[in-house]
Length: 224
Image (cartoon, rainbow, N blue to C red; front, side, top):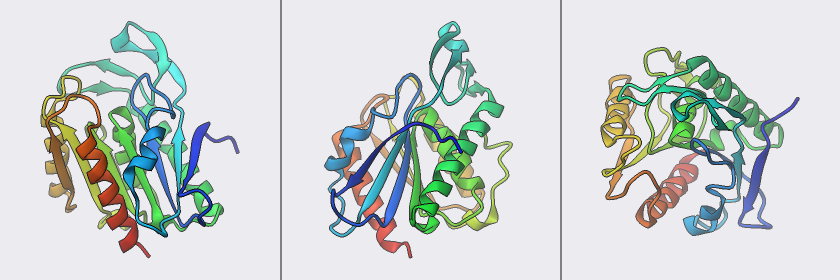
């Protein structure tokens, strides 16, 4: 089987891998975007994590005049409701399922796998994690929105999955209102997401990195 190409980092180096985090970048970036954050997370000792940062394929993006760039799906209008190519988003989620399956085959229990994403990657992480047919450790959705909230078929096995949502209050690309809307949607579906807001734009700030590291540590420490 062919998998998405990806940057892989095992951290701390030399420790046995007992967990995995599949972390999707945003529009126009690639898998190298978040790799430098890994050592800054200061994860607890004994938590051997394989980070997988996949590269999205390059496709034409309508809102950027059809310019070809790395993207998990096409965005057709940049309005508050985000008109996106749902079929492409679900295809990307399927590719994430393949990566999860590969980690399970490598010996990482699905219960110790987190699916994470920034912006476009976060929208895919919601779809991928909530539809996966085995228990996962958690979802981390950063500066993003729940693009498939109206069409997603959530697998009941994910009904208690931990969710972290982080957003910038000054985000000019994905308004913070969309982060809060994701929280409300998940709460209405019976989930209990943790929401973190920061005085930043469409980015990741030092305090968020601290909070991400703490959340990953708590989440994986509580996983079987």
